[in-house]
Length: 442
Ligand code: S3P
Image (cartoon, rainbow, N blue to C red; front, side, top):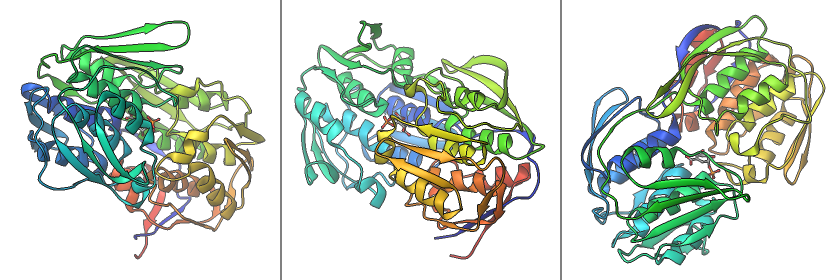
């Protein structure tokens, strides 16, 4: 467990690109593995989570070759063509790999055993087991809902019309991916629209996916058994990774950075509105489209942030960025209250309690409620000096690395290893911009 010590050094300055979007990277490998022929992916995030997806697609018959940094070619097996892996597939820390692959497997006549690390083994899988079982898959899971599990798919799945009880792009995508090899029309209804990368990418590959509003939310439908065309995917920069740099540059006086080519899908940009509502100085320039997704460069300069009880964000447009937003609130002046965030309790860690613990350990006053946090901002540097337990959660490790840049005494992160899952270059990029980050002994 390499420790990471974060303490103030310089203002952040410079221009850089963040690594490829994690959600799009996973989907580019899964979907090209189901196309007929050769697809190419550029800008793929080479973090552990995405590499776990690549390995799983290889184990199920696709050929996935690395041609260069973030540059891959995939020879797909065609919809319906996945093969049974010879061994248990290990999804590491990745909930997205697990839930989306369960969808794909559900409508193939194969049996797959899946496991993951201690964090993933604690995450609820019932949310995908229920709809996939309705379609005809048989799942045997530890305690009915946890990994390790065995999923036995069938090529005779039934199309369903499903209203998801949780706002989750993973649940929606799992059902749509199961619907790919299901005769007829599979429908997913979501009360709150969630990220729509699956819908966009499937459409680009020739599947018939329709998205409608019916007054109660979004209705997404897919017609089963299309032939997916191989395509070239260009993966935009990950706004969820950019979020750490956006907050860091906002809170460290004198900072001025530009992040190039960041994905700006409107279902992902809540962090920009949230930071702006706190007074951040953020400008978007050079807007264009990359691989069917809006992208742009984000310039952020340091600003005095104010706490807020209303971040003015549609809840579906922001989820993974809350840990670092809580750190922004700790440095802001005044109190910030965040509610409606019970889903944060079932992420890589229980992000409400782990963030509350870490902030308190560093002298910030926090009140935890069942669905949120109230953070009492310091109006400047936090005391720091504490050690943060990351609980195998990359976003906790990175959030406190950012907060340490505005701490009177260094903040120690007990384990830097989880950062490898989504943002392997994080420490180097932050240090390159001027941050004070040092890896300690194991
Ligand atoms: C993701 C969806 C979100 C997000 C996760 C990636 C995706 O999870 O937290 O990091 O790629 O579909 P939920 O679907 O559980 O909200």
